[in-house]
Figure: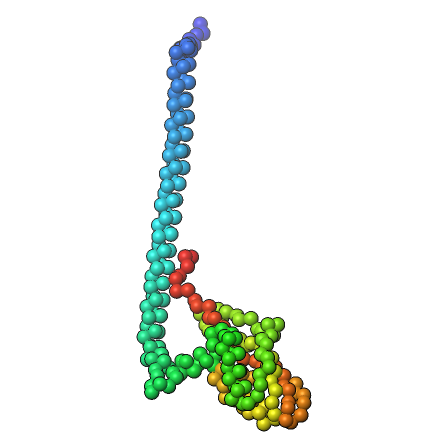
Length: 225
């Protein structure tokens, strides 16, 4: 008689879904979704504020560094001024009513075109030489515009071209040219047009004088980088 194997069947117990269980499962899913979203928002907001804090600290660090460099530059300039002061006192010193070297330099190379003083100077030279100064006309088209030098260096001297018309005898004209050479302000004669005779000459001079352009002083303040 053959042995019979008994097959043991295990029956799985299934819990039927109810409206209450479905609602609880939905609440749980919604809760998990909300928690995940809140966690992501917390990370993003926290990261933003951390980034802002780091950027602020970086900016403060740069400002401190720039301030330190600016202070160092001021100290260097103060040191340079102290070194230059003896020379400045020497150049600006006057004695017995004499003109200082600084004033002589300003007269020879003024800080601007100074046309008014130039006209007066030419009239005085004309009177001293015995010639008649008929006209003094600056030539704007011949002027070289003032250029500012970079890096805190002094600008190069600039030119001012003008024409002067005078009349007089030959010796008076020669004396006029000599007095121009000895004038306090630097003046050159580029060309001349002569007409008339030795006793009554008419001379038109194309002349050039100079002035010092403005310097573009380098800022001491260190820019943020």
